[in-house]
Amino acid sequence: MDTLPIESLPLVKILPLFVLALFIYGLAELSFVHFRQRKAKLGEYGMSLKGLGFTGLVGVLVEFVVGPFSKLLLAVWGASLSPFDAGLTPVGWFYGFFIYEMSYWVQHWLAHKVRLLWCLHSPHHAPQSMNLFVGFNHSFLEIIFYMPITLGLVPALLGVDPMIIAVFTFVDVVWGNLLHLSDKVVTRRWGPLERFMQTPSYHRVHHAQNVKYMDTNYNSITLLGDWLMGTLQPLQAQEPVKYGITREVNTSSFLDVHFGEFTLLWSDLRSAGNLRAFFGYLLCPPGWSPEGEQQTAAALKKRSVITREGTRV
Ligand SMILES: [Zn+2]
Ligand SMILES: [Zn+2]
Image (cartoon, rainbow, N blue to C red):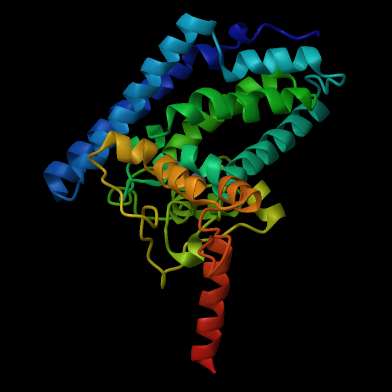
């Protein structure tokens, strides 16, 4: 494949500096919210830092045992396997942007709609307030294994040049983290940007457990995927965001935040009386049940619409 080495891209070299800047901003934000407003939930900052530390530790271990394993390396490998290369032409960049955004939407939609994947993604949704550290709060399983495959390997197999994947990864890391700016510091919407870019206002909706807001705003850069797939949900003044997930989480417990959903899944799998129930628990959306009333986001939304319409009548 005829492409420049990824390491030559200046953006990739300066990415750690941007991440460090975001981290320092996060500390400043924490100081402001904690000391000036006295509203910070310090346990949740601790949760995010523990998650980040553990991801770093597992990353080092994986590198030590199997060698480097990253989104960009998988992108280069995927490109070598792909029969098609859209290249670095203007059309290639446009195609790359489209595929990256749609891959992001699909991988994030799956993370909410397949219970096994929700177990990997739920730590990111566990915090009950919003701050910049939530952007760093991901399961090591999601960051180290799931995202490199879905956002590195898959777009490259679909013919996106690894250089383009590197550029969108940079934008994704920087912009995607900024979406978690504290709502106690950044309170306003971002004007005309709200028409085509994901902004903190959209992402706060994504982190909400309000039935109306569940499973919306999956993209992290633009609104494209959510707009095309019908999952775009702006923040509504009459519906304030309630952050977090629908189960009680002990936010001071690393084990509960990162493995609580796995424990619940395991107990459902053990109670499954047949293969349909077993694979239903594993692969259907969270809240699915082989019998009785469903508690999935789709079922809750449907019941809430019926209730609202009933109330209106
Ligand atoms: Zn999510
Ligand atoms: Zn988020």
